[in-house]
Length: 108
Length: 116
Image (cartoon, rainbow over all chains, first blue to last red; front, side, top):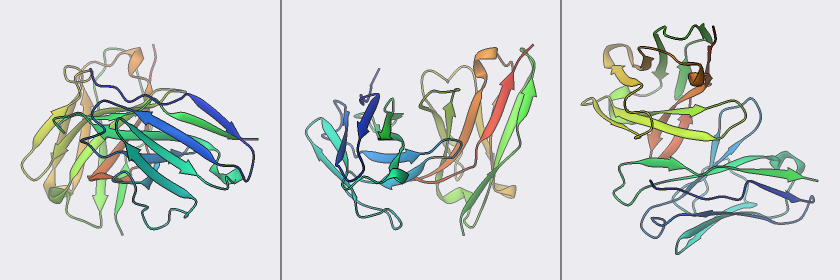
């Protein structure tokens, strides 16, 4: 079965840059989407179609994709960015959606 | 304003049936795919399946295909997720979600607890 692989956790200090990766064989053909989820809340979309920021997403959030890896970069991390981050995409046939396992970002 | 409002928390016993709902407003249910996402306690998001209420086409993730049913009633702008026989392992938060390429709107979640 198709999988998207993310690092389980990451720690950064305020003001530093966090780069969260998502690896999957179908990513060269399918878009990656990124969601932020804080405890007790529903997720929210922060990046769509690999690189696009929805209105409301701070400019410090950027997305990129190269080959089989998509990356969410948070520049100048703030305490409020502490959350779980999930990538999401589809398999090669675009019929099955899937989430990565999630990355817990801790702001030290 | 688009809103997805889910039914309230449920406590059930193993073997019981359950149907939870997701009522949408601010747009016509028939125009977008609606999906269901499971989040078990302390775990990540899992895609369960989607329905296109306009023609009732439904696609299930293989892990969920035999255990749940996704449906929709366009007359009342509501999507559903149902189980015929719950198991303790179904204890989780369940989110409905509107697909517009990405998931652009989420319900608030329905907590389902299955315990004897």
